[in-house]
Image (cartoon, rainbow, N blue to C red):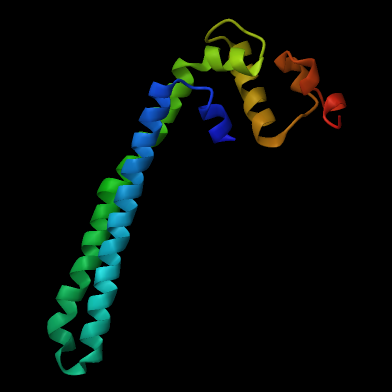
Length: 146
């Protein structure tokens, strides 16, 4: 669902979302690379059983660093990306409603909140009994089979 909705946003908004995805990918890849280093070191140390105690701290260090990278970078990038998406949808919601053909409602009203929930349900699950409230006849359950 998100790629379809994101395609309705401006190029600038899409670039901000791409930047957030890139930051998240970098953080996850860096974390996994450090885990791979830790696993390789552990395999090397445990193959030489005489020195395993000496290398134990050095083998745990990459795992700790990976966890710190994940917590500091990946989770922060995920939260920042979520905030960017939410703010894009909040700022451009009226334009998105128009592009999706949803009837307009008074801004920040209960009706707008209800229409937003109906639209989200429609996009996630398809037509329902209340789909015709969105303002498009072809979105109703009766036309879903056509």
